[in-house]
Length: 210
Ligand SMILES: C[S@@+](CC[C@H](N)C(=O)[O-])C[C@H]1O[C@@H](n2cnc3c(N)ncnc32)[C@H](O)[C@@H]1O
Image (tube, rainbow, N blue to C red; front, side, top):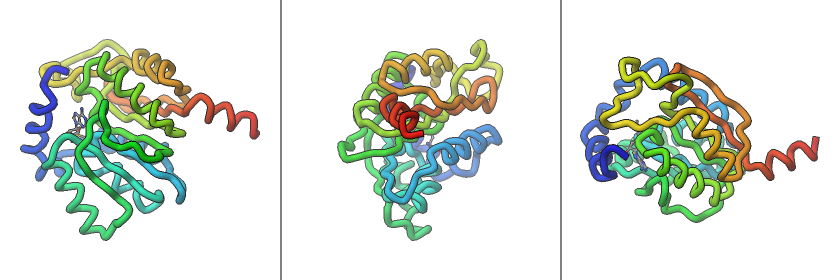
């Protein structure tokens, strides 16, 4: 991580009230793909890591049983809570938690995360993906800044001073090591994509049932 957790939290606290006003086309495409692939059913519990102002969590809540959002920025979490209240959504719970310590040990069917894991170093991402694997969700949907080709700081979405994105290959390996099978790869931009992973046992069960 190129900045400490506290520095990242402070950076997002500062932008929290304006965060929703500055979304790029690629961010929107990425978020929509995460929402589309997560597709929770009425009995599903969703854990949205680095939930920010709740873009993914709020979109999934109407279809899910419950959505749990975790983030390190109090300012972003306050915005997420305010929006959930404004929309009258009651099956959402937002609180402090980080990728490698989500502060959640209940059941979870689907884990989502959008535009955030690139703040971690590759070793930290591996650790985070292993922690997510240990929660035993059926599906993990990761939208993020990730490299499909050569890293290019002159292209959007990658600021080397604060970001530390991985290659798609590194993320695919980390998913496999954590017991997931990659079931979809969506390229939004050469430096933005969505990976969909299913627990290997869940993927096997589905194949047997077909
Ligand atoms: C660019 S925002 C994305 C927010 C949201 N997922 C979205 O799609 O709009 C990145 C978020 O990641 C959070 N974050 C950064 N590092 C984190 C970590 N290690 N654990 C949890 N949240 C983290 C920040 O506080 C911020 O809210």
